[in-house]
Image (cartoon, rainbow, N blue to C red; front, side):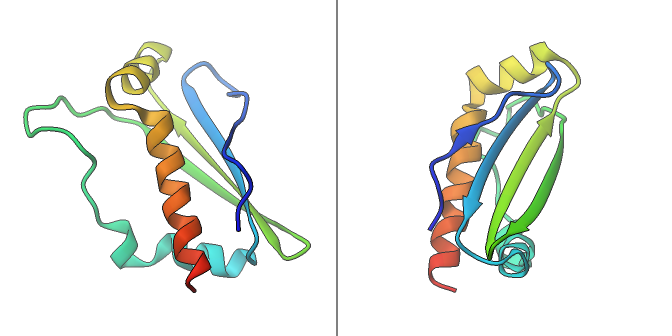
Length: 108
């Protein structure tokens, strides 16, 4: 249903960006992305793990019945971004999130 995960060039050093195209209309992808029961989960890690603050922007663009979802994580610094990538596997986590969304859409 989706194309291969493609890390996109980061527009700023403090960010991670991934884009994926889903074979579904934007309204369906948006609904699946915002369903409350799909939003509540805890990221991995022990209770004593230092929290990392970052912002996430998600854009949904529809073209010919498909939806291009672009997710950007913006960190306070490039060092903070690198720490999350190396320590917590942020890139794989982004890919896993989009694969779970793909699976959900396939069953919608």
